[in-house]
Amino acid sequence: MKILFLGSSDFAIPALDLLIHSRWQLLGVVTQPDRPKGRGRKLGPTPVKQFAQEQSLAVYQPSSGAGLADLLASERLAPEVIVVVAFGQLLPPAVLDLPLLGCINIHPSLLPAYRGPAPLQRTIINGETRTGVTTMYLNPEMDAGDLILQEAVAIGPTTTTGELSAQLARLGAELLHKTLCLIEQGRAPRQAQDHARATYAPPLLPGEERIDWNQDAMTLSNLIRGMNPQPGAHTLLNGKGLKIWRSLPENNPAGGLPGSVSDVNPRSGFSVQTGGGQLLIEEVQPAGRSRMSGAEFVRGYRIRPGLLLGG
Image 1 (cartoon, rainbow, N blue to C red):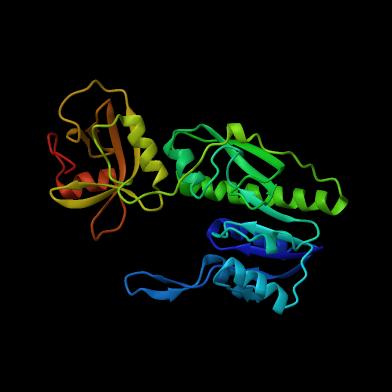
Image 2: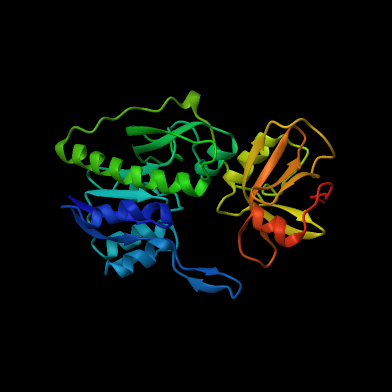
């Protein structure tokens, strides 16, 4: 089969790597245009572009869906299958209708649950204990196409978005291989989604990463896991920003104001009172500094019981 790959983020790289080493013909890679990055706001490539160039693949960067349709026509690319993984843009009908065997997508949820742009983060933030990966046929609606294959995984109580993303990216690549084999053999299943059961995973909004210590410990632990590695949940300490990367809910009895340090342990970190229970802080990042363990932070910043975090 002749395959064209569309992807942009790190999540797409395992699937692209699988196609590079497969028996199928990879016509090229389409990714988003270079964007300003970092403090200097210099243009930088997507992770997929960087990886594709290292593999000496043809890379295309149209600025829109219409531009993608024009590209396919001008370059005379005739893919039998288009594989889309974390591309970051809806495809127009002119592209969806082009490949003879369809446009195939890997989505990091058990559809129809968590349709939308932030399924990984929302899954963790909502405290789910089970998720998975889905291959499906794309249609003009977001994540609403017919299902091909799905595989579920359990989510551990300390799993972060970054860890879940890496796990599902690998699993998605394996599922893509099974999917393409079935398509090649003409045996791929096709099951319509139950739209009545669909849930939506909206993008993260500015301010959602701010820790509200009036919430309960489990809710805050899920938020911290969901914001790791981007953008990072944060609070204030002595008027300066403090990111919290890892935490663990505790069953200690309530005591003190929400946001106040309730206990300090130079070996494990420090505990903070929440609106319901206490939260052991295991990894932090003070403003302008590197990440450090809660224990290192306690020893270096003189954290004491009664110290208040937050606004």
